[in-house]
Length: 350
Image (cartoon, rainbow, N blue to C red; front, side, top):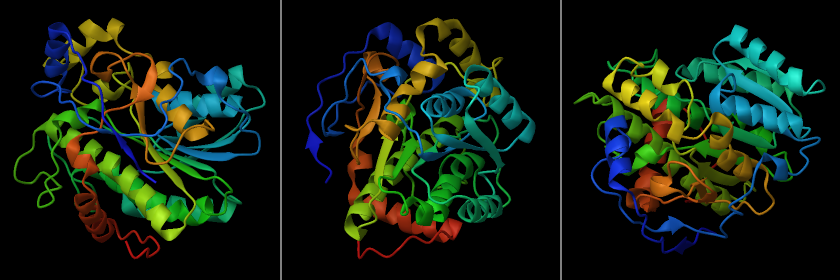
């Protein structure tokens, strides 16, 4: 069951408002909203507190770098079998080698997938259904952020929407049969503090009318957050047994900016000058790891850091934009997503 609590006002220093506005992560003032609420997590929870994952199987998208790599490494360290799903096989092998330097007995493997390609996602789903006995956790982590010019996928979707949201929507459907074979399956979908400047235009999800890089990124991450909550609602209605949660890393130092707007862009220069104040990739992974493994994590929750504007700080319940709480809009987005991706989830009567 999804409950609500009243969120406390978030106090954001003027200096942080300026920095985040320059990065494109904040539009106007911070809005105080209700959070999807269950029990707040222990603020000091870390990867060292993760219970044994011996015998459990996880798929982590985008696990060759950044938070995805940290997720894969921590899960493997705790005994899980981890499948890193990403585009580049060479980077995949490098990630496996780096994990095994610290965890020689790590059970980690690579599967190629281009999340912007629906056929590639379907192929991955088919391979995993044939090779895995079940799936205990799916971490929908991979993302691209704010490329300066609009491009489209092979399927005609705007590239950020296709990679960040559409591919993960389809992958979750493809892996649902494996997840339902687990005794305690979880799906964790990565969102972003950028959702607080996000809007959802159901008539133009592909940003054909106007393309503003960060606004389009924010929309894709808002869709991810709404998907996580709607998946929980449908799991409850349909008896799928899946716990669906969302997480965000705050602002973490990864390759996302370099590969998106670029370090020479105004956004990239602002990023570089403030990176000492941001989370490391390992710190940014904590909300995801808590959601994926902690016994006290609960379906329908949204986890992230709790410092000023949730940029960094102790683990807690993240604030949720009002639109993300709109079940009717989320159901409509789900229906459109099934049409766009060809994904088919079980009927719930929802």
